[in-house]
Length: 322
Figure (cartoon, rainbow, N blue to C red):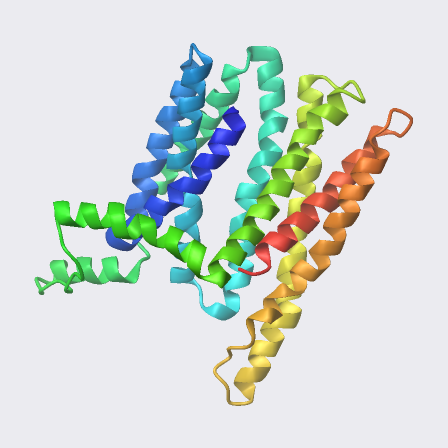
């Protein structure tokens, strides 16, 4: 339940964060939401009841998700279309490495210090990242132009829409309900969301199998079972490299060829899907490999190698359409 509610928080947080980043800028969202997430992580670590733990984990997920959602917007602000896939591949490596490296550290922390230290590890690392982020600059063009106009004592750009309480009402009604409306009425939005949801569902269902296999079948300790997640990290690193290579030698070449022929460098978006075509085969192979080899009479290294294939295929599928 704490894991499930945290993931629900990751789903609902961007509904508020995305429109806020369009109004107040990317930097403000980063600097405000992360410390709130860390405060609820602190609350989870001090929780004295299961209910308190659930609430704190949910709120930690809600306030921890905006950097994930707004980070995609920052990439769009900084990089042109032709280079965007490579930067997004590196950017998405971080949230996929988190669930892989977290158990490797948290397993031994929980085994030797108690489960509360899993929250302290998140708190220490998140605090260091937040301090580092204090020096970041704004990347959203509208906010940059508004600040520049204020500095030069020029009239600010006109703001479409109301201000004050009316703006808050607009945020809570139109802005929040609009994504839900689009999800239900726009096929491309609904299908793409289903694509992403299925990808994450497979990932977290697979994570749930780790303690069942490595502790239940092979008798690993809590710390050793956490180290088994490092196979996921290796697979994610391989997927990032493969994605960049595929983009460089397929998508970028076609885009440059189009530009040389007098075009604008824009080619069909289907050209982004080569990585997913590779990942779909690798992911399926990893799942079958893991399931068939998870037996006492088969060495545990076979399952560990299968996790590398799974993670590689999963990330290739996830990153491909972006």
